[in-house]
Length: 248
Image 1 (cartoon, rainbow, N blue to C red):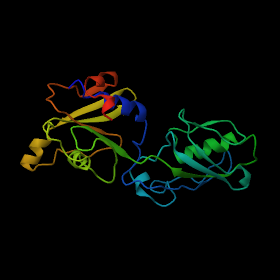
Image 2: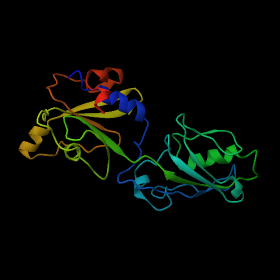
Image 3: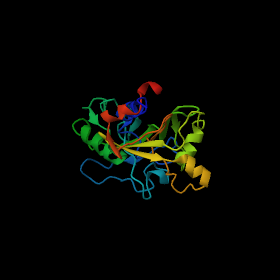
Image 4: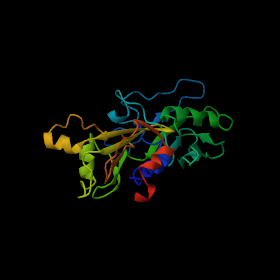
């Protein structure tokens, strides 16, 4: 039991700001957001059209995708192709542009990033016009650990309940505590929500109404022993009481 919650601390500390805005069934997408000059209103991304192909996972009621560390973005300058470049967002959230000052990209939508790039090139190019294309990004994922057949990180494809996630991770081991499956969900940089599910009861009664759907970045932990009590919300340091990072 002392081995139950440091995996969460490690995973959320490293991945805490990632992929909560990603939708389901993510595929490599491209977005062509064409600039129209600094200070003027460019062609803004519309809900459901953020990736240039009408992909509903980036709009239509869902938040627009925001750039993360390690994302790869291609810049194409309409009138100055010599400035075309493919850049990777650095661990500190910045990108290094050719012949321009670094730009903070992490947390920006593609439209916001496009405007930031145009501003960065104002002193170098007259009326810079740039198209932005998202080339690579981290797909939505969940992590399963503890007493499951194959602990690890899995791509989150479509609607997936906590029960389905356990099956994807190889099902329960013989020593699993089916009645106290933990779900950890990142709330903000310092806070994690913890919930306990009695999957044994759900399966016995064939009632899956309480089997919540996973969100990107969720962590499922199946303990070996009973858990007497767990707070609904935990700070990251306190999670070391439950999960050990050595288990992943």
